[in-house]
Length: 139
Image 1 (cartoon, rainbow, N blue to C red):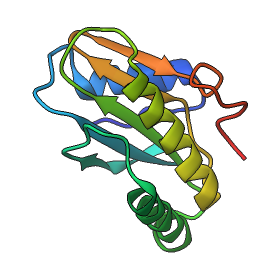
Image 2 (tube, helix red, strand yellow; image 1 turned 180 degrees about the vertical axis):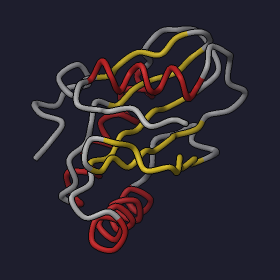
Image 3 (tube, rainbow, N blue to C red; image 1 turned 120 degrees about the vertical axis):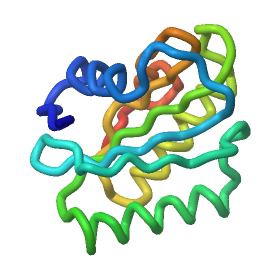
């Protein structure tokens, strides 16, 4: 049973490695885990066809969903995102734009956001807020 304790970025990265495996990805997807009391809820959400970062309307829609989940499903939750895509293990401008958008969306919803991760062929790496040009991933 997948039930790790997630209190550090390293534990989260290990959890993503276990969930995503070492294989390549055929499409551009964003994955979302809700974390309550330092444990992931037993549901992994997949957002498909996520090649381009979301426009304002899509980001607002995701913020509304996060706000609803925090109010009605998992009060006090934290959210963790991972972007998976085909291609080489390099961080692209599009990866940075996705991470920036995900951090901003969680902040707009008032939901703490864990470090966003990127999964590419054979690799999972963190995209911390300071690397993508933000001062803080929370708040």
